Every structure is written in structure tokens, then in C-alpha cells.
Image (cartoon, rainbow, N blue to C red; front, side, top):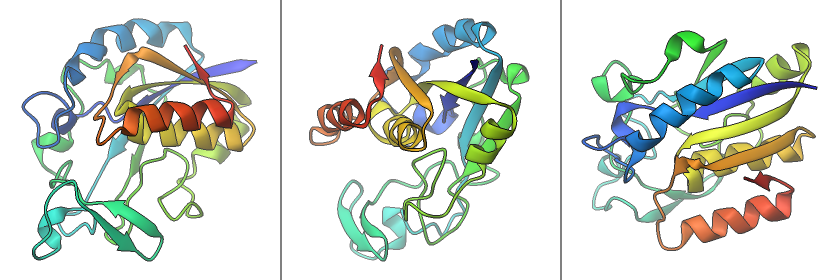
Length: 198
């Protein structure tokens, strides 16, 4: 079975010093780079938001970062502005071996909807195109690493399992935000979805 490493959102804004920094986010760069050569394909995802993105707290008068609002597609955490198109924070971490990537998939570029998963936007129906890419290449075995464990990594892995891929998350190569117990909830959701936590 052809296998791929899916590296989720290893970008400056999610690393220490960034606008939505995940604690020790840069601590997974070296392990991820080392893993890349064990796989037939490497896919990098990249958050890619316009400045007026609806998931940014600043775009909701009176809202605070990390509060939750209702969107047409359901509840949405309002984040600090991050990974804005054309800003340094949207760039990959400078230590990441970007030249090893077979595909760079940008997500979250539609202003009205967020996109945690590498496969679908948060309405759970708008596809990113990753499913077709993997199936056309005969890739069925997926390993997920990156940031953040409890949001974009978890959503991606659960979607992969739901779509019939073999899905595994290497937890030592992930870091979490852990917002109000979100890490435990994500781990439980992944386990129930059939994702292997390694």
C-alpha cells in the first residue's frame, strides 16, 4: 500500500512568536523532517486566510479571541488573525524541508468559512481536492503530523478514516492548543473514528 505523510500547517504563526502560537510548535520540525524520507509521498497543508476571514475575532465587533460564535455551518471558534495571505506568518517554518513536498495544499482561503481539515472545509461538504489527488496516486495509507493536534490534525485524520483511508497520527510529532479540554476530546473523537494514535 502506497503511503503518504500529511504534514499539517507547519507555519510561522503556529510556532513560538507567531500570532496563534502553539506551545513548542517548532519542536516537531526536526522529527517531521526525519519522517519524510520514510514515505512515498509528502503533502504539506498551509492555512491561507484573507484578512477579512470570518473566523478572525477582529472581524466580529465586540468578540474576543477563543470565544465561539455560530456560523451557517455550525459553531466556530474565533481565532486571533493568523496565516494571512502574503504575510510572513503564513510562511512555512524556515526549518521545514519544504522541498521534499509532492503537494502543497492551501486551505481556508474562502472568507466565509474556516477549514481545519485537509479534506473538507468546516461545512463538512466543500472538498479541498486532496481526496482525489491521493486516490489518483493510489495512496491509501496516511500518517498525520503537525499543528495543531486537537484541531487541524484531528479533523484531517478523522476525515481520512471516514473516507476509507488508513489513518494514523504520530502524537510525538504533533503539538496541541488544548482549548478547554479540546485535546482529550480530539483524541476520543479520533479513536472512535478508527484513527490509530501512535
